[in-house]
Image (cartoon, rainbow, N blue to C red; front, side):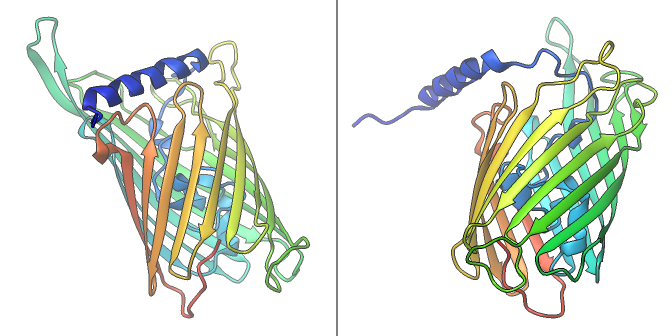
Length: 335
């Protein structure tokens, strides 16, 4: 019986990389802060980041700031994901709602250690690359009493810090204060839905709007996203996002290629749901599968992510999240 070797998988991985090389974006790398492009985890990541029109948990801080005004209740979430070359991404967020007003706060930290070598292979320096993100969210539901139509607007104010050890490269640290704004419309259309439940949603989000990053004088990765989500039956949710990078100075910094994200989620039982999706980004697509296990007021989310960044190291392919439901009443898990 033939048993696949590690080399077999390496060859497959290399072939995959070459195949998607045809879609390489020649305008990539013209903006700063990769922390903004790394999904933190949870169902947002597991559904391939197709979440602008879903945004019904703390993933709204990355997907659509308008989502907090319709949260089922307050929740506290913790995230962890290993990254390439011993790096990692950690996060903590809290989101809540008071009647038609939603709010939230979140932190995200990206750490990557590096060692510098000269042409002869001698170590010349050792340091780290660190990016930190702090997000403050507020949103309002403009039609809180309408059982058929909901309309929300929201905004995120972000503070970004980038630190690069001088031993690796001098004068590369920077700060930025971008802004997100989002609209989220939810509608009740004919279907097998519970009274008061809305099963169709559309969204429009502008992310990372702001001045050039100082003192490096590079732009932020500004993106416009349009989202659609539909639940044909209560256990099933389908979502699609179209993302368009934009540049306000195209002659100096060209915008990247548009990309597409799609995802699905299925509530199998009261305590278990599955989700999956794909984010088709030029020559580095990401495919995700995950599950959410709920015990009492605690939910555990585990995602498996396959892309061309993590390689074959299994530890780099998984992310984990823990969410605590802090509401006063028991809620049926959302789809």
